[in-house]
Amino acid sequence: MFMLSINNIVKQYAAHRALDDVSMHIERGTIFGLLGPNGAGKTSLIRIVTQITAPDSGHILFNGVALQPEHITKIGYLPEERGLYKKMQIGEQLLYLAQLKGLSKEEAKKRIKHWFEKMEMQSWWNKKVEDLSKGMQQKVQFVATVLHQPELLILDEPFSGFDPVNAEIIKKEILELHSNGTTIIFSTHRMESVEELCDNIVLINKSRKILDGAVADIKNSYRENKYKITYAGSTLIDQNEALFSVEKRHNGAYNTTLHIKVMEGKTINHVLSYLLPRVEIQHVEEVVPTIHEIFIKEVTSINAN
Image 1: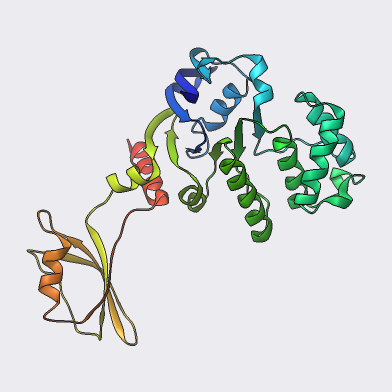
Image 2: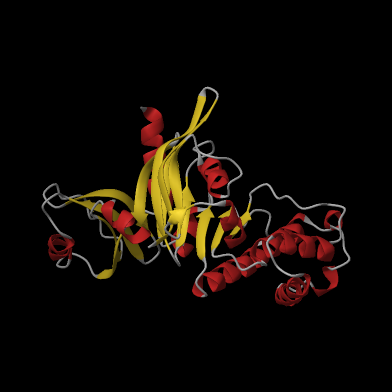
């Protein structure tokens, strides 16, 4: 059973269609990347899942049953635009938000103390949000999002505003939540984070889903038989029209690196059989497109049509 099944969702705002027959299925316990350029429809979809708005048509199942208001207590949502009360003390604010999610005051205090120690925020209880830096405010918002131990955690640009040290802390916490069984929807423009964290992704553009699947499977499907080969010395290796073309060449102090594309019907073994009598091979690596490159390719292709 899927944690979340999103089926044929349509959302229209006046003359703008934000989501057009969008479907996706998110397995329990996975980190799921929700990707797309600005204005693609990601935020509209998140708002429907969190029941801030409703779809015009289509339906969503949560753990196999129709999404209901009571499911909100099982969902944590970290929006890109943070929503803390700036003049309210942090401890009291977190206590209030935790009780809105169904925790008793005693249990909420216990969990807040745990997270304050974990995130090195012990002295923050009586501080006001407006007295904190943006990165420190992000820490508070993250804690508010996970205090009630949601089954489904929706993170919209969770690393925004963090310096590298604190971004690493938040990433560690995300991975720990994941290892403890939390299902995570991860929306970001940082494609390196997608490759590092996500099991599956969906790409939305211009209100429609254009790509989805496991990260490894998607990358493999975009392989183009390209390789990077490094050999000793600076011997000139030109393209061989029957075997490969040279797309890029770099001459270092002691070696040469070629970026090649192997011709259709040939393999890297054919290329190596050709090169080995001529040069001393030091390194061979297949060049598989990154999620960033696939994202750019697909979005550019759709926008050009």
